[in-house]
Image (tube, rainbow, N blue to C red; front, side, top):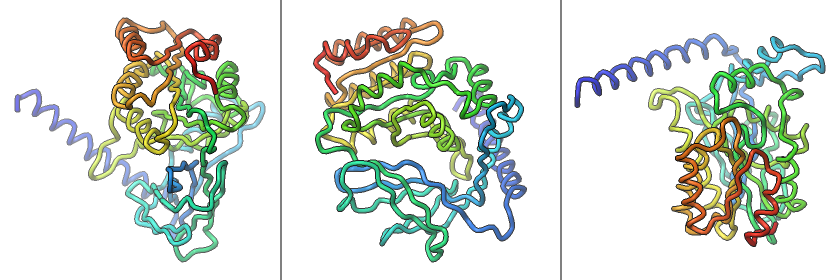
Length: 343
């Protein structure tokens, strides 16, 4: 190993240990002595034979409803509170006869039999083992039997105006906005309604936003009238055995692979933007998905696609994937229809 490489590894190790120590201090400061652990349920999804229930065990839920005339400072404090979570590890949770134990970041993953749960949204009881009063209803979506296709969409700058292609703009928008002020693109609502086909086709969201924003994002989507769906967000936690998580592409590609595997008979439309690396990630998915990707729709925010992204887009078209690009989603439904893709 070269000198520069050794220095990089050493620096990362020191930073990791510092981050772990800092997180311990924060957790200790936030922990409420004697507080009963609480369950926070995320939107779950289905495989051909299982329901996947996802959530987190926390010591408290910190959520404030924004006021109509609330300023940016109040928005900032409410957004920061979403990240000040005290996760509880090692807690056994139960749904029926199935149990799971929360991991080091408090996350839980329960797989229960799908039998008896038809198409649509369901509310499934989950509780901390031995504590019936902790019961929370976890939502989970089962796709319709007559679904024609599935939709997997990015969120930032695809569904919701963020400026993720600029770190400074992204942070400003994220931390000074509220569920009342964040803007979902109207054309995204229209296109998603079209592809959703009145509930027949399942919709999933994949984003590098942290799980701390799950509740907030669903509030924004609900307010805008955007089709709900299971979200696959990212863990930004720090632990003894890991320092943050993989790259944007690793997370997004892995999440898409999991959704495709859970819905093996469905072709999919991928929606994203050229502000980050969606063209590259989606091309890689197309290469390994065995023809399960029927189309890709990309919004072009900011400066639009660069030369490398255009090469990725051309490569997907060469593979027979229908690709629509543009500054907005106008014309996307027509492009898909001409390519033989009807919801």
